[in-house]
Length: 104
Image (cartoon, rainbow, N blue to C red):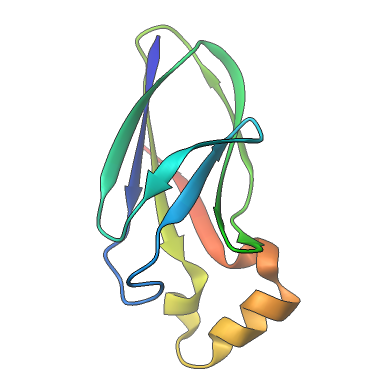
């Protein structure tokens, strides 16, 4: 088994709301602002994304090997742009609302 570790940035955007953690198209769990969650996952190819309402993150494909610790960071795109751009991303670029990055 491998460990999937996801950290969500501690930022104002979506302050009181959780992001759904989607692994291989199924909801694995939820993560709150500033939280770090860990999940055991099987070895092999996987797809990871985050979701809130109809908005999503980018999809990351990765391979997990036995005893890997795979670390990802989720943060809001709205924080980068600030202000009223939340509406822009929510309605015109919902698949870019959350940024998901693999960490070293």
